[in-house]
Image (cartoon, rainbow, N blue to C red; front, side, top):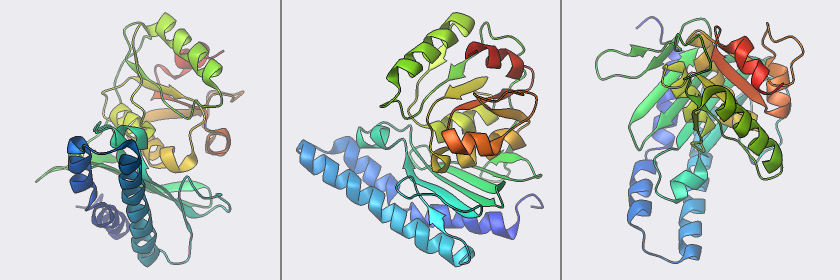
Length: 266
């Protein structure tokens, strides 16, 4: 189909090939009756295998640019931003809220992105200027953000690396609940953004996310007609991907809710 370029087709293929063992590993984790140490070793080996596979497969597509994961120091303006198992703690506990997230960034511009959840066999993908989609057997489903106009009754997700800023996270969550009355904490920013792109969430507010964890999801939201903002932006009328990539503090929603969501953390 015209909206799936050879580049995006290759990236989707690389993700699925690299993650071919994830479904089996997840099934084993659900049944694993081993020691805590044994569980940790199993998860580490699974993550490392997928990380290695992704670097090899994506390197075949664009050997001229590096492949970064959350374990790497990201530098430069062109790279693959990859999270081999986003929502790793969920995966380790047999919770299906995890995904493989891959985005291609060139000159600080999001070019294409893929979010793949093997536990539910869900594949979300987007390419700059061509829309966002969920893979289907015969026809792919076009993703569009919700049409919600008010915070009251809106379903908002939040997640992120809260180890060093738990107080800030608690304040943010309290503010969300005060304004909307409903909050979901999934532990997987990539899926949060994919579901936001598909209208299952109305907004997502989260702190301290790594660029490799959120880049693909950001493009899904943008291409589904949503607004992506940095929480510290002075001008909330425009997006600032450089700001989001730098500090990881993210506000995403439809355009109707965007100015109202901004008020939550002010």
